[in-house]
Image (cartoon, rainbow, N blue to C red):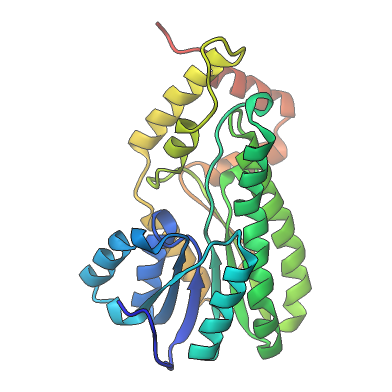
Length: 289
């Protein structure tokens, strides 16, 4: 995998959060689909898994790794301007960088709330603003924002994450309407649960104390997440959807993906809210001793 690329006739894809999860697999899949991929990550010492997967798929010549922290505007500006100087264009932006802050709203400190929004929302906005002038001037481009089922439905114990993803949804709705007259398409991909480690990491770092008034709910949530993580499929289905949206000349706005995701969204839209409360209360019952 090269670090300084020469100009190429391929379309250029710029991804955030490429060291793991959806970003890692999407980077390689886009390279296989014909893109030259700029795979950005906060810490390039974590590129090992991406290098191995790219080599396995004979994609090393179509990938360039760039260090970039989405929460540092100066790094974002330098990364984007560097790519434009080397390659002359950015055709696709995939805003994937993000993490899940687990815990109950009362017990999550404001610093953790701010960090959740700095990465999941403000970092996404920062990268988008850096790329937009180029796409708008060319009257061409696609921006894919990786949201979540949590961007449509708020789940207990994930208030900070759900709030950040709801914000991404609202931002993307406005941006889609703003950019359509300029030939730029904005897309939301809304995955359910997949084997990416995001939920386990989020709850693993959640504030928790045995005397918490939410301790029994946290036990239920932890047990539920463990079952989901055990049964969740590999992220291939989400990656396929991202590739489909990236290749489409006129992509749709929303791509919900995953078992039960569409049904859950429709149920929230049409069922009485009290029914949702009853379902959530039943699922959050303490585990049997």
